[in-house]
Image (tube, rainbow, N blue to C red):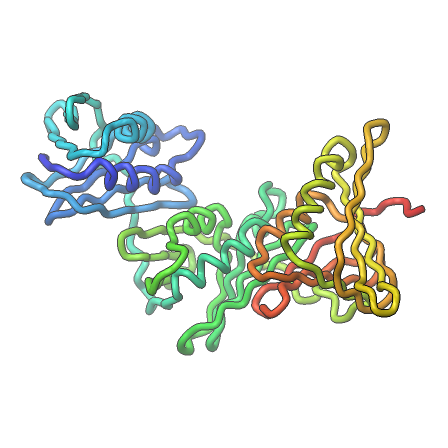
Length: 379
């Protein structure tokens, strides 16, 4: 195999696929990246052989087609340290040694037999669903973070994709919070429900463009075990999670006694300040919302306390409708949801200190987030 490519292209591709490399493995080949060169392009692939596989294609001049696997970390660090210039790569197939040269740098890296690399089967049994890439990126950014990170309940480590009609509803929950985003589709599609690992969708989020007209082709195989997300230059294949996702709709309170609407930036600032004090205590941030005097705005008090260390209290003007409301949240959960909101203003709906709080972006009905309260003593 002999090829040339640009350093920035190879570095970008290696950075993308390296996210699929497992942190720990008993299969040494999964610490390698597979390079396949043919027809003026180079395809890079990596997998953990269990949950996720990523392929990424970059342009290149291929003199002699071929394939090889090279250790991902070593190759990525070497290529990432090179100057922005042309990289030449040749492979001695018998010794499986790859020789790389760029500008005034050279290296030889030992590889493994590409035949040992776990196969990444294409997922194309059913017609692909096409979703605008920018819209999917936004949806994932508002849902993936709410999935569980421990395996106590495997279905909660995934994101449910409920497809049907002209909508895709994405939902994730970890037992303490719930995120739901409804994506509108340009055309009707067949009904299907799948639970995709949140880790896989988190990596897909990194691959998706923030804007533009690109679309993502989403495919499932008839066995119901795999999903494929094809962006064009990159493809991600995920092993689906078996099981039944909780009926989350019953977790969203149908009504509220108080609605508080504030500027997102101000709420985020006060939540972050309060979290500084909360982290030295129990991690709790307290919120108190009350209507203002006639002709005056309502207010939202954001506070935290750490016993024997200190306290903090900040105030935000807002629109408060209903009774005075008191509620306390885990500080990280509060900042997580505020970071996910993409509108100028955000509304918090509450019923009592012991009932869930519901966050809704003002002017955006696609996203809703529910957080369970923390139980505290109110003075």
